[in-house]
Image (cartoon, rainbow, N blue to C red; front, side):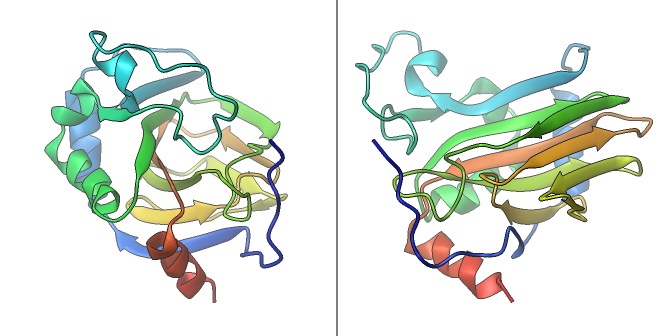
Length: 198
């Protein structure tokens, strides 16, 4: 079950040639009328099929859950009610297998301690990668990767090598909201990432 690391390696942060409308995404996020929360909150937009449609059977146990192939995936009611966010996700679904999609919320005056995600890197064999699209990312919010800040702006799309140490600080007056999209790294997205790695 070891995950081999190929010889070629990308930079740890790559801004991709996609730009999305942050105002439309923010409006749909706010229309969800989500409950208040403390520290950290996750809104699932695409999830394992059996958790979205409980009439479906749960998948059998798997030897390896890293690449998302252990189950089928479905859009949730949250995503179905948000047409612009759905169009963002569909941009990638049209070209590769999209697995987990979430809105990640971090409350003001909160910190995500430094950590690594061992299977979220392009160099990891048989895994998925995660693209990050900031939605609400104002002054006072900092994302650090390998000890240096990643200057992500709302509506941009970034590949981050999350197998490396990363942390988040929100000292701003508002929560931080990111859209994260996990996907199988096929030739289409690999070529875009490597072509943007300049």
